[in-house]
Each structure stands twice: as structure tokens, then as C-alpha cells.
Image (cartoon, rainbow, N blue to C red; front, side, top):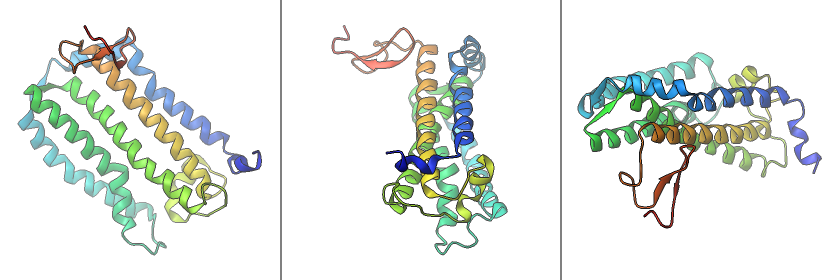
Length: 228
């Protein structure tokens, strides 16, 4: 068993970095000031049509930014699969952004208008869920390359920014895949926490929610067999 996790040796700094990032993202929604900020920004709202127009303008900017970042870092200059140039920025930026947008668009269509505080909270929450889904690909890909994390497989320039950012000891796909799993857990936790705290701010009750939907005293959503 010890040998199975030896590839994580000398990665404590990566774990601590993710721990700090997770705490920074997860703690603020539990502070009273966070709820007051959401309510404060909700004094200004925007209709669904105007929201759609804004995203139509911003979306091409995100695409261009993703492509520019890809070429600046030259992640994939030695990779044989050229389609990776499109997949990487799509999975990291565009897919989470688009998923968050569609969720907010549906909400704003149902409500007619959406407060800026609600917009920020939902964008953050839906984006977190989508980012987790995108990172699951990395976990599965690394598992496939390393035969379920049992053998060493060296990555190439695709891992260089991550390796240099976190000072990883090697380009081992096992290390990268493991911490992508950690990243998935953090993204899901943040998305869930932000969404559940947002529900509390909105005072959503079973009268306004699907049958059986309730909030506990901490603001977490769940289901009850007897909503009456």
C-alpha cells in the first residue's frame, strides 16, 4: 500500500496550496458580510434580454483569451494531437463559463429579472460545478495513461504551467491526476456551499421550491419524505 502512494512523495506543498485555496473559497459564504453583499448588489437588477446581450459580447472575449493564453505559454508545441489546442482552453474556461451562463439564463427567464448579487453567486456556483466536470476528464485521462495510477507516465509541455506553479517534483501524470481529483472535490464543495448559502439568502422554502425540498438550519438543501 505504501508503494502505491509513493508517487505523492515531496508533494506536500501542492496539498497545502490546494488546502489554502479551498479554505479561501469555502469560508467567505459562511460570513455574514457575504450575505449582506449579495443583498446589497441585488438592489440593482438586470433583465434576461440584457443579460443575454452582455454574454454575447463577453463570450468571444473568453474564447480569444483562452487561445492567447494557450499560445503564450506554448503548452503544446511538441504534442502530436493538434486538437488539444482547442480542447484545453475549452475545458478550462469556455465550458464552465458556458454552463454557468445557461444555468443563469434559465433562472433569469423564470424570474424575469435577476439581481446582480444573485448573478454573481449563481455564476460562481454553476461555474464551480462545470469546472469540476471538466477536471474529471483529467482524472480519467491520467488514470488511463498510468494504468489506474499504478505506473509512471511522464507528461510533456501540457503539464509545464501546473508543474512550475506548484513546484511539482516531476511531470508524473499520477501526481497531476491525483491533484486534479482534489481540485474536483474543492470545486464541488465551493459550488455546493455557495449555492446553498444563496438559497438561504433568498429564503427559499418548500412553498417556493420543488416538492420535498427543504433547507436545514445551516442553509443546506435537502429532501424530506413529508414536506407538509
